[in-house]
Image 1 (cartoon, helix red, strand yellow):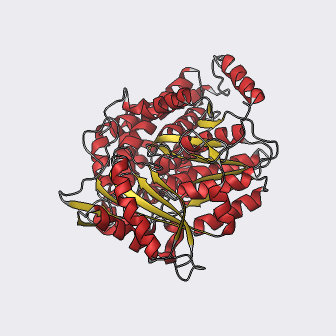
Image 2 (cartoon, one colour; image 1 turned 45 degrees about the vertical axis):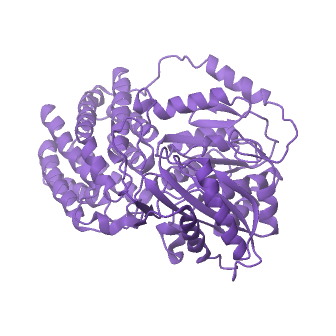
Image 3 (cartoon, rainbow, N blue to C red; image 1 turned 180 degrees about the horizontal axis):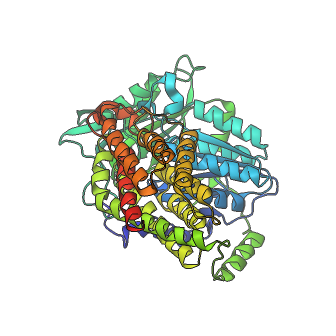
Length: 583
């Protein structure tokens, strides 16, 4: 378990602070993550990677020449927010455009997609690519739904090496696509991981058993088998991967492959070497030529005891890129000429830091009526934070049935940050709309992940509807909730029946709109809609998940409501209490 921490909520920020202090030769901190400390040639494509904390050396440890130009770092097991990704990409951009790369998880897809839109609006040509290498998380016919695990490294490296060669953005993207299409990974675990401050692991494995087909966020495996010997583990990994070759590889014999035997946190290097000796022999027996193998911790999951094997099937071009030199804090290959620091960027950063003890934040002008409405908004956000805090353990237990068990922690981070940001804005005299939009940004930044993106969207939609000028009435609130429902569906792609928060948000929004159309006061209309939300959340127990991290474990979730749906229902009822108090 993770033993050394201060405040668990500050763990990711403090880890990143220590990392940058230890590796100033390679990286410098920026808001949201790190970028190279060395100069990037003008016009070079910037490859910006990212994901949650808890996976070191992914993602910050892979920033440096020959690999990433920057890394956006989210909270523990949670994607960075769009604002954080945008910040890192802006700092890394050298005039040649930006390629955003990340593992294929719903939260990362949402936040990196939003960041790409913001960069495009800034005039920065941007592309995105999600690594999807974990063959256990979906079949070949649904390969686009697969998770990204240790295959991140060879795909990131191929794209970054192409960027170092001066290729334009579209060609760098094509390299990433080629590498991604030829990369497969499969993993096993002997115990789950424990997050900072938690007193139990996200999942457990019975004595003398192993979980097969795991992810890197504490998700349970797709099955269990008897605990193997090292040679048996090697055989399972190799044979499983050799069963699924890229479309243009008919036979492994005569093929070249980059091979990564990855430790997930608690398996010692000597154990990995015992396994690798057999991996190498089995691949040799199959006629595979191994190119520059890597054995060690490349993409981890805190203290999870597990390993994964990755094969990237190489052609001449991909082999050249795989062998290309790189110099980062955690991954080095070959030799590069000495690099000079980037004095312009370093001085600009120092100047920004020197002037960053800022004047008090400014909020837009607001009417007295909107400021009074902001009192109610702040009370509602306080109620949200309190109900989430009270039910965080329950939400985590529900989420752990088929997911990674961190929904309660993420909701705590987001709701607490949102209430704090709202209180700050309210104290400066902000109107209801600004209080909500400040809360939206804070929730997205601190929670990250899918829930951070979606709750940021919900609060921002409400803030836009309420504005800072008028006294919002029941119809205006219902309009904002309806827009939030539509925005969440647009952003996340989920619909009613997918076993997500949408199964509650849509009927809640519809019920609220219908009640306000009957001219019911807001508190009464909200009460009716919250009752609908509670029933809808309970109904998700009968559904099979079709999206998110729970999808590979769909059968396990039958009989248990969706954690996001349940938390939304709890929140709607808590907000009703705040509305009654401020009637």
